[in-house]
Length: 371
Image 1 (cartoon, rainbow, N blue to C red):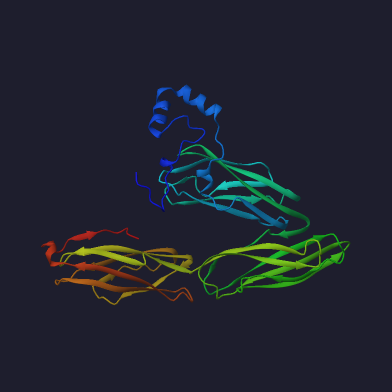
Image 2: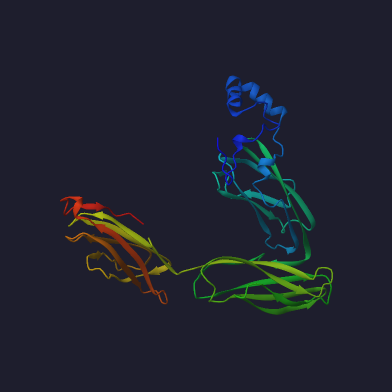
């Protein structure tokens, strides 16, 4: 077997400590010959740390730092299947209830990526906490990889809610969320500043109360309307006058998306004979009910069926009838709705008309349902 420099294979690795065979064929023969023998082998040679498995990870440790009680603290250890064989994770476990662990996916084909998600349980634990996360693989071979996390959960600062989650925000609209910050400890404790590397975030901080060693703030986090489309995750850093723990992070996340979406963005009509008709459909989605005002194309051979009801999902059937000459079809379709500020949605349609396709004129070459 020729080994590609960018594609390492487990097949050519030397025998691992838990494999009492020289190659894969003899290992399969051993398993097929006696199931009890295979069980005996696995019982005395358990999965252990293997170099091939560790090579898939770039990070093995993470420090959550100092976080407030109830704050969201999550980290993803990414790994990639760099081998020719399909990879399967048999299970994951944590040595401490202070950290829960899960997988983004358990089966990875060549060059696919997955993640081990470590979540710090800041609501139920306090003080310095650490955990070892064990990932067990059973395909293509048995192996274990251990990851380590740690952090310090403050008992004196509490965020409610534990993170700023904007959810899905319409592009160009902006949004705001409120967080309550409560502190118990020194009477003179103050928040001096709130910082972020994300210029699209702004905050408004108001002290709500102070007395008997307790301090309360209300903070409003604003998302500016000029943030580009896509998912975002960042941090706000609350800078305090506490010399021992001067800053406290707060996670901010969400997704900016258009109020409406049109699919497909590119519509292929196929190769048509003269006179043939292609039937397709457009799908328009929104998060609130809306009506389709008009659908038009710069090619008059397109016909559309538009309903008048307001709803969040519209299926727009369309027909295209080919002319008599060979040509490449390239047209723009525009959809206009009654949703304020949504603008016009556009789709590019393409196809070919070929007289060499025969005399199938008048036929239908595709049906509704493509999206």
